[in-house]
Amino acid sequence: MMKDFLCLSDWSLTALEEIFALTKKLKDRQKNGEPHRLLDGKTLGMIFEKSSTRTRVSFEVGMYQLGGHALFLHSGTTQLGRGEPIKDTARVMARYCDGIMIRTYSQAGIEELAHWSDVPVINGLTDMYHPCQIMADLFTVIEHRGNYRDLSYCWIGDGNNMANSWINAAALFGFELRVATPQGYEPDAEVIARAQKQGVKLLLTNDPREAADGADVLNTDVWASMGQEDEQQAREKAFADFQINAALVKQAAADCVVMHCLPAHRNEEITDDVIEGPHSIIFDEAENRLHVQKAIMATLMGPNV
Ligand code: CP
Ligand code: NVA
Image (cartoon, rainbow, N blue to C red; front, side, top):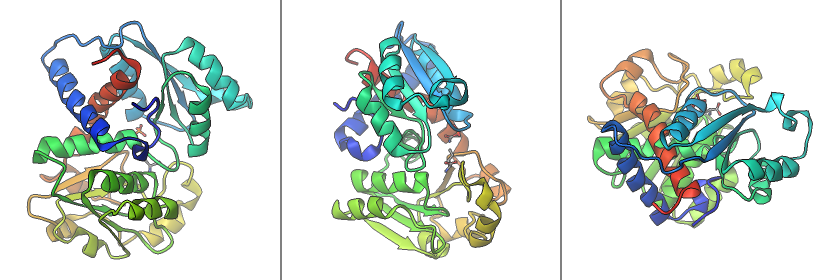
């Protein structure tokens, strides 16, 4: 078993499917009001260098429901924010906490943190990946469609951390993925190359209609991610055709589902009517962050489950 949850590609298909199975069990127990204190007395340290609503709340509530406790640490108020080295922070936090969740910019930074930490480290988003979100997304697809397999997925918009993680997921889980981005906004070249070596069924295009054609799952995200606020205007121009709207949904399978990790910029990358419409599973997707992350934490930090 892996010590950390930094990137989907570090994990095996079997181990990730076990996380889905545990997610289902824990979600059922929570819905039935049955105690499931798998992390009784344990503490998760949560370091945030970027803003968050879902990630912070779902990890904190998740730890509480598992019988543990979560500490919110905004990096700006810690010594990390004043330049204390990651390797020192990692070793000190590992002496107090049973696990560390971090949301930051650099993937190399969290790899360094994990290297120096004796306790599990979980990626709560970097510029490169957002693996907890993809696990929640796929669990939501399973709930709505019975399975994640034999479906075609499309990604419309920016080749960002979410798109990179979807490519990792496509390579690992074996589903077909079509990614439509404007030219110059493609996903990470190394992520694509690694997935292609693994035989991924991946189509890269600049045409959103080609990506959405007959797709079972439509997925998008903001045009400018956290840290790219200065590029907002230029991106609005480049991404103007890359919107999930009623016309694009019509292009997809009649029973398609629409996803968005949130927060959304309504009527930019996705229209208001699609978010609120019958194909949207966006709020189930947000809820499942809680359940899937409980399973990830229990797997990494708990006794055998
Ligand atoms: N989807 C997601 O990670 O949301 P937050 O930025 O609110 O945590
Ligand atoms: N791509 C977005 C995801 C937010 C959850 C960002 O990095 O800001």
